[in-house]
Length: 208
Image (cartoon, rainbow, N blue to C red; front, side, top):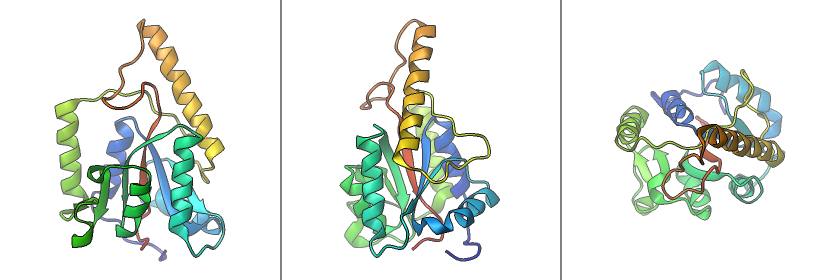
């Protein structure tokens, strides 16, 4: 990670769109945890929405395996459903191993032929992608369970599974309370279990 990696136009707005739509944001990086203060400072400096941040345990020669193991643990231990993932072509295998559909794996940059059927290339950048997300949101107007709340001014750093499990339990608890107030269970998005936490996994800018 350079001293100040360039932020692609529209990147922050895309993350904010997902957060405003009720999704938990999880930043996943292959960088070692010794860089956590530097990374969190960069996220804050560029006004990225607050979310959990996952690092590798020390230096590793296989960061992709650690990323996959962490995200898989969110599904099995914290019962979090990952609905979209962003990154580079190196991350396609990670997201695919989680069962994420190619339509929900977003890769920014020039399209690579061998990955054509495995992901969605955002060749026109984040700004055009945001317009597509907003158009889809208006067309479907999905209403999911309330998102868990991270403390204001916090990136939930680091992001161990037990921390996210507590967020998951908080979300389900808040969902139940809302259901009681409304006199019935809250509606769930098509294809997703009711009151199950949903998250978007993001790879940090400037990471190859």
